[in-house]
Length: 349
Image (cartoon, rainbow, N blue to C red; front, side):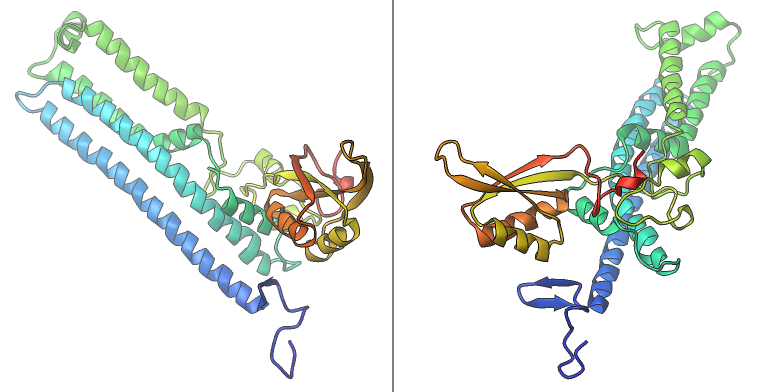
């Protein structure tokens, strides 16, 4: 901070845009407001999850009441089962949206706020890039299967069990108790559909739901839930990313540390020195110059190679355009980039 003018010095500035300079304290304030906004979004979608569950509970209670009425039919419970399944699909979709906002909240908690409390008292090397990529290219952090299975196990499994028991009780006990298995199958019939087919469909349908719930129980990509901690998950959730590594004890075991998309750019320009110096100064990315020849014109051109991440592409294009609007820029995905500024080469085996 300049003592005379009170303006931030070059060392104090963390972000600048069109002459405006952001101080570290202002950056922290902006991140605090951003955190509050993402918490509000997550809470909104969390309430929507409760709403869908309430719909399922209310309709289940109404269907059972109608079925056990003197004039009721057990088919009402079957229809309600399909309606509850529709609610389950809607809630699974809402749960994926909830996890999208919750992922950002957890990323801020684990890699920004928690990092202030644990040595070496600075965020993880890749947290800002991961958060920026999620803002620029939103993507659901969990699959449809995990969302469906998790909501089924947490809430809907018990609703299906109650519906199944209610259907069996209505069929077997009302208006009077059945005397044989044949009579029970006869009561299971709905219109022209034989009872054995209705019973077989019900067992298959509920069995498939239970199987999905069991098979998806080991999917733990959700960040907005308090999940069981498995030893094998700790090492899988903490790959080495970025130029600096933190110890396992300072990283959240459930953090989605997926590697950001890495790109390779080829810049064909006649102002190689000016363009490369601009990239080195403004982006801090290394640039390698190669010699090339335009086969149509036969003129020599410089070809600049620059590796970067998906969140830096827009800045690179602007920097090149400022120096050489006639430059030719090619951006292509890179399978893997190892070295300084990316994944350290010595950490790869």
